[in-house]
Length: 145
Image (cartoon, rainbow, N blue to C red; front, side, top):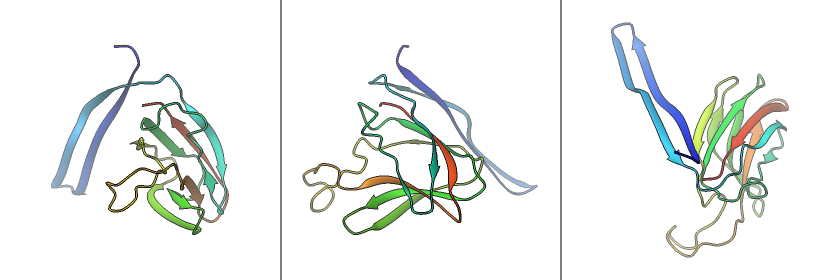
């Protein structure tokens, strides 16, 4: 199949030598890729004051797969930043040398009026990375959905 993304998905939890739980360790997920852009944005230096990961400027279709890897020694936190209130809402820890693969929302940084099912507004918030303790390099590979 052309225009597809494949990635592995698995999890093994070991709580003691007698208690091993395995979940879909050999699962390969295949998803269609609507657009053709990516990887974006590459390696960035993330300061403790935060870095705006502006994927709208590079991708044609938001909602694709994204792989992030912290290449430094400090924790980096991913989240949504609201510039109108200066509030940062974290949702993902990027541990050093631990890659994370996620599907980003096609509504990334957009806001919904009312209960979350109301009308959609243009993006008012930003997808941010924030380093703990010192500036840290993070590699971001985002693709069109």
